[in-house]
Image (cartoon, rainbow, N blue to C red; front, side, top):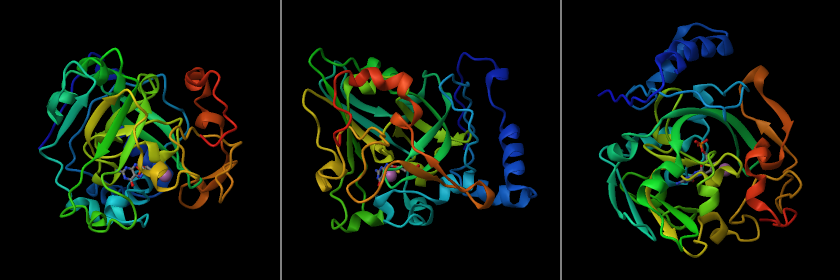
Length: 312
Ligand SMILES: Nc1nc2c(c(=O)[nH]1)N[C@H]1C(S)=C(S)[C@@H](COP(=O)(O)O)O[C@H]1N2
Ligand SMILES: [Mo]
């Protein structure tokens, strides 16, 4: 099956897949065999057309293999390789998202209705996990604000809560409630959610989202630690209170609701001053972590008088 999403931009604005493939070729320094092998692991090969964005970093993206083989997705197990091994068991078609709470247009929205009519963009973002590793991922997605505007938040709405699917038959990590309480939950303040950097991603490297990365639709908030970027979303709820969030509930002293990337505030058990950029061989390196993961100019204003030295 092929899915094609059109938008207003001309074809020349689209990053051709061949360019990605060439780049991968260069990065690998090898022939096409490894590329074909990696691509075989991705969804069903549906191509997404997307325009470029001023918000993309010009840093080199991690290769597809890193992005799809080193994951956190506890619904499939706690090992970094578990999502790649087991996420294929998840059925992502059909898919729908319930939008409820303080909105003028609540409802159950089919995935196809959510993505039809939105402007898909390629957003090459840094992803900084709270565990002190990082990657650069060429997401395909659209601004969360587009969806929120369509469902018409009520005047009193102040927060947006997100939930991941619960389906233990297909998400083997959910057969145990020992690790986390399901569903995985996350949340943002409404003004954070409306920031243009916050996207709902439906793909990466120009194709549909691989299951292990949160198919078919996941949040990406690049200025926050990775656990805020909740995968495989089935519910979005507008509230007037700060919603409970999974890692914050699990260990409130270690993971805050805000969890903005901050090199000056260490995790109780490790430093957050630097990070390991995931990558094979020559490209593996340690680098300094930046305030708001390097997105300070776009998001600092959201936190006006908040004390950023506290473990938010
Ligand atoms: N539903 C769900 N979403 C999740 C997680 C998870 O375990 N379950 N892990 C989070 C963490 S800790 C990180 S670092 C990112 C990893 O995203 P990636 O695997 O696409 O790199 O997903 C986040 N979203
Ligand atoms: Mo993470």
